[in-house]
Length: 152
Image (cartoon, rainbow, N blue to C red):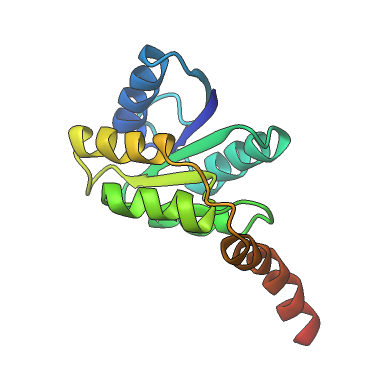
């Protein structure tokens, strides 16, 4: 599977570990964002990664910053991206199954490497539930963006 990994400076060390682990598992990794721990703006990494995920709907994305919050906010501003900040395996499973998340966000300052790997494993092994109720709710995620703009 093609998996895009994006990071800012704060997430760089964890993102490198995530990318290495993904490659060891046989995934094709596409890098976005910081190439070192030098200052790098998280919205730039998020936009680049999300564009890649939207170009290839069969791919997934992993965004890493210090807390994961900035990346999740930046990514979720992009129509068609469903980014989930997950701090447990259960959250990752539910994000994929019920919300059809296509981008996983991790906080490097809050998540150690072993927990990040377990969260990532849960995210990757879980398929979206195609039951009508979940599909209907996921469709409303994008619909709500346009409706709010039109109503204001």
